[in-house]
Amino acid sequence: MPQSIAELKALNEKNGGCWFGRGEMRFFGTKIESGILRGHYFISANSHHGPRAYTVRSFNDEGDVEAVGDFLQPPPQQSGREVGGTPRNTLEEQTRLLATTL
Image (cartoon, rainbow, N blue to C red; front, side, top):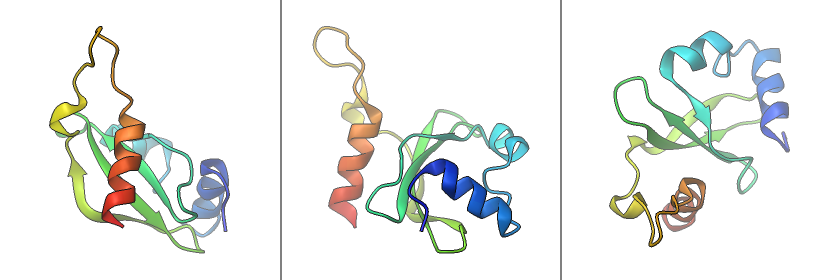
């Protein structure tokens, strides 16, 4: 089982997947927002169809990737700026979302 996103990318490609392909990620505006979480999950962000939206992803032993729950969730309402103008940590918010939904 992959222990890092780099290992997951390699496994996906080795098994004929293109989820992490440079062209695919560029086309969909995909960025990886976390490392491996809970052994089988990570968070991606896409901006292809408008504002950046987040999706919890799961993967299997073959490196196949799929969305968990609702696809392309916009950031929570409170994800603007905190007191003092410091940006909130979207990874922290999405990790909290992962912890409460799975």
